[in-house]
Length: 238
Image (cartoon, rainbow, N blue to C red; front, side, top):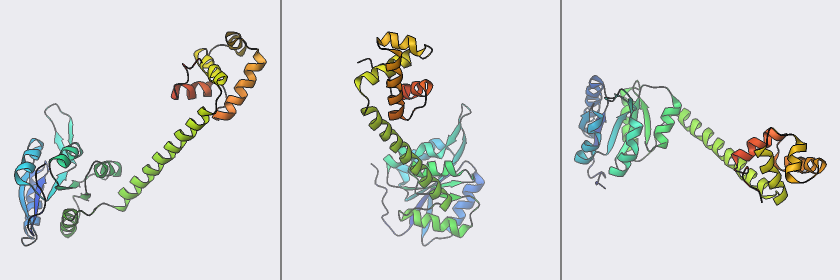
C-alpha cells in the first residue's frame, strides 16, 4: 500500500472532475488557503485517477460523483473508484456532486467516501469539508444519515423476518415437510389428488395443511407454494 499519511501541516488535495472550469475554480479556492492546504494535482480524465494517487499521495481526493461517459457510452461514476482508492492508499475521499439524489450520495458513503459536498456549496463550506475529511471526520448531510439509518433498520427487519422463518421451518415435522414438497410439486392438483400421492386421506391432508399454515403464517396453498420456493422446501421428500 502506498503511504498516503499526512507528513506535514499542509493538506494536499487531488481534484477529479470532468469539467475543467470547475477544476480551475476549485483549485483557486483551495490554493487561497495557502498556509493550510494546496492542490497537488487535478484531472478530468478518470483513467488518470489511480496513477495520480500513487504518484502524488494526496491527503484528500475531491472526487466528482459523475465523471462523464466512457468510450462505450456508459456513464462513469466516482463510486466505482472508491474500493480501489481505499486499497491504494489512506487518502480520504470527499465526493463532489451537483446531484440531489440522496440514495446515490449514501451509496458513495457506504462505498468508502468520508463525505459528500454539493458543488453549489459556499466556498468556505467546501474548505471546511476538506479539512474535516483530511482529519478523518465524516462530512455529509442529515438527509444522508437519515437515509442510511432507515435502510439499515429495514435490513435488520428483513434479517429478523428471515430468522423467524428459519425458526418456524425448524418446527415442522418430517411429514409436514413431505406435504409441503408434494403440494409445491403439484400446485394445480386438488387436495384429493395430493392426498392420494401421499397415501393419506384428504381429511388428514387438510389437518396437516391447517397446522402448516399456522406455523408458517401462510393462508393457502399459493402462499405455501411461494414460501416453499423462497426457502427451498419444494424438494424435501423425507
